[in-house]
Length: 357
Image 1 (cartoon, rainbow, N blue to C red):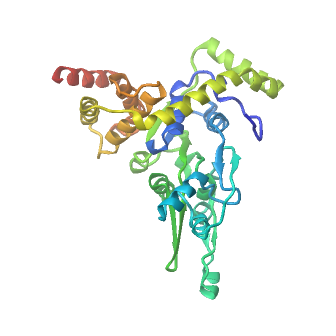
Image 2 (cartoon, rainbow, N blue to C red):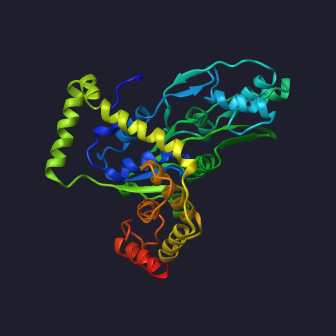
Image 3 (cartoon, rainbow, N blue to C red):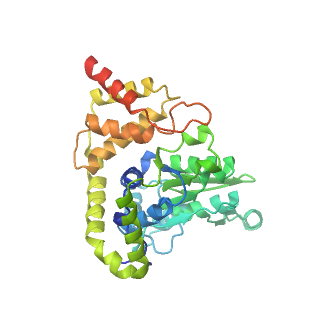
C-alpha cells in the first residue's frame, strides 16, 4: 500500500488494547462519535492516532475538491436529481451542469488542530466584501474541510476554549459544517473521526463536553517489565531502520486492514435484539447516567463490535465491551475521583438482567 511517509505501524504498538479498540471501532463506524484518550504522557496516544490513518484503505475523491467529495455519491446525486449534505455545493452544481468529474485516490487525511487555532481557522471564512460587491459566495475552507472523510486529531483537547470544542463536537455529530456571517451562509460535509487526547493532570473537560465524545479510554503506562522492554526494542528498531521495521509488520497491518474493511461492509446487516436493548438500558439506569446519549452510543458500539468480529447478531459480551468504553466518562463521580468503570457494578447489572429474562 503506498504511503506518503513512514509512520510507526499501528499493529506494532505494544498493549493499550482498549485504545486501539476505540480507534478501530470509530474507523468502522464514524457514527459512534469519536473517542477521547485520557492518560499520562508518553503512552503512545499520538502515535496510535497517526498510525490509524496509515492502516486505513485509500479513499476515492474528486481530484480538485477541497472537501474530498466521494465520486460515487455524485453519481447518486445525478440519478436522484436532489442534493445531499455528504456532497459540497460546488460539486453538486458541477454535476447538475453535466460536467464529468474525475476520480483520484489518496490516503485518509489526519488533520491536527493546533491549540491556538481560532474559530475562523477551524470552520473556515466567508469573504463578506466579495459577496456584497459581486453577489458571489466565496468560502475559504478551514480545518474541518480538510478533515472531511478523515481523522480530526485534537491533542490536549482539555486546553481548548470550550466554545471551540462545542463547535467541533457539533460538526462531528451532524457531519456538516455550517458557517454564517452577516446573513450569508455556506455549508459543506464534515464527516470525520474525532479523536481527542488529554492529560487529566493539566485539567478536566466540562461534563457536558465529555458526554459528547462517543467513547473514552483511560491510557496508562504498562506495568509489566517484559512488555515495557518490548516497547523499547520495537521503538529502537523502528528508529534504526523504519523501512525494514514497517515491512516486518505489513502482514499484520494488512490483516487488520482487511478486518476493518469487512466489518464496514457487514455493519448494515448486524441486528441488535430487543433483549440486548433491554440490557443496554438496564446498565445505563443502574449507572445513573444523565440523559440518553449513553444508551445510543452503547447500541452503536455493540453493533460495531459484532461486525468487527464477523457476526451479524449482537451478544451479551458485545454489550459488556461497549458499556466499558461508553460509560467511563459518563459515570457520575465525586470531585478529584479517578474515572473508572466499576466492573462489579457492571456484572451485577448484567446478572439482574439475566434473572429477569
